[in-house]
Image (cartoon, rainbow, N blue to C red; front, side):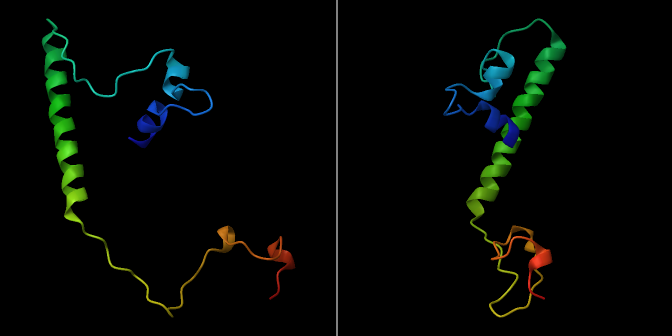
Length: 99
């Protein structure tokens, strides 16, 4: 879902969306328009798509409206193991770090 949203967002530099750059046109993300078809399989799949989309929207809204925030796992003063790869330290390499 994140990839689709990212590719549909208009790029500030280019002024068009990445999906439009790749495909040459701006695809629709949700089939709100029902184009009548004589193909029964297409009609069944479109109906299933609409149902699944409605279920996904309901599930996202349910979780968003709960207002539940998980409690913190750690308290101040707890000893924890840190991965130092993203820490900004005053030395450039671990080899030159004090022991």
